[in-house]
Image (cartoon, rainbow, N blue to C red; front, side, top):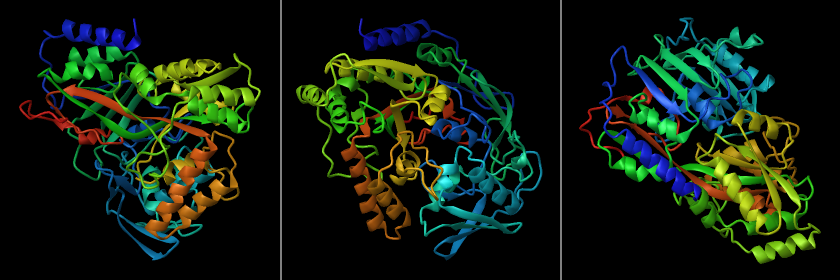
Amino acid sequence: MRPARRRALIASAALATLACRASPPPAGGEEHALTLAVRADITGLYPNPPTVNEAYTLHTNANFLEGLVRFDSQLRLAPALAERWENPDDRTYVFHLRRGLRFSDGRPLTAKDVAASLTAAKKRRWAVRDYLHAVESVTALDDERVAVRTRFPYQILLTKLQWAFVLPADAVKQASVPVIGSGPYRVESWTPGKELRLVRNPNYRGPAAAFPRARLVVIPDEAERLATLLRGEADIATDVPLDAVDALLKRDDLRVVKRGTLRVLFLNLRPDRPPLSDARVREAIDLAIDRPELIQRALSGFTEPATQIVHPSVVGYNPALPPPRVDRARARALLAEAGVEPGTSLRLDGPNNRYVNDERILAEVARQLGEVGLKVEVNALDKTEFYKLIGSGASAFHLLGWSCESGEAGDVLDAAFRSPSAGFVDSDNSLGLADPELDRLIDASNASSGVGERSELLQAAVARIAGLRVALPLVVQSEAVAMKRNIRWEPPRNSALLLADVSPADPAEPPPR
């Protein structure tokens, strides 16, 4: 039986079994804890190891930690700890903090805490360090003003600072940093791999969250995660099986949201490791992959192929790049020219709990590469172990995804493709890639002051990566979430679980689509 058919039967059985369940308790109220059934856990509580630069982890941490600015539900830049800012010169931002800010333990939050947190993130190489690569210094001018100076004119600094979380100045000096933030919630407890419990922060600067408590319960199995929602034991289920969506939409007790995201999944190939160091081998792998077939077999047809490493709505998307094509005869010929014998082994690394159907995608890529004579071993790992593996440089071939939440390709270019160098030591480049022309384009785009010029440079950098074939685009990720009818939440395009945006709803409200 094909996997998609088997999953559909499992989902249908779950729906049928639970169709007559008792009605769930009403949402809201001081005793109700908002409960989310989630696929995987965070990698850590920022900034402590093993926290990594993973969107889900950082978004979840943003429930109890804040930066100077934030993105709203429409991914528009908005004030957070800073109420306003100005540029006295082209390398300096001066941020004015809101008055009366306090951390969750009641102590005042001042510019000294901001300066200490951003400086520590760079010096101690915390997970968000690559967002701060352009920062030269952070100075507290007084209790309510902080100056951030960059190494060069860097007009996109604001889009990076949402991840520069602020903690107490004395806390960041400790070896294990206590997680004391200023967000709408604070951490009550965390049982790694099991559950994260949050409670309202009584000192939050804004309106109180609708739910006094929140629980993120980790349920890896997709059928059980959905069943937990259907039994009324969870208010929201993330990563709902895409092939169960149509049946779920017919239920009058649920709201379901399915849509494309900004995340593009691609295959990283290290150009410094044989046989991938041969450009003909990288091209052969690209030509061997049939993206539409992969979507049908691994994703039940519920997404679209990617043509490059960024989403079409992102500044830097290059419309001149042709879509990837499949030509397995040519792929076999290229492998033969490169001296790669049929049956040559490759290991394909990837997570088994990070992206939608990630393990199935890995298996399908391996199957397709087998069509051209490569023997691919899939190494699917828990995401925490996977990030350790690629961070160590021990993976030559792996699946990665990236969502450019700022709306610009510089997000992924800076973090994943800029080679480490003087002044840019904080790259998360897991490719061993050191391409001077690509670095020049990235650096020039970062320093550019004109929108049009920056866009052209970003497009050229994206095209350069396509030409090198070190990151082969696969798909634009689609995903679905389901929630009780008495929950009001419109998931943002970056899929952030910002729990203060969730509130009780009138069950008579029309569902979002």
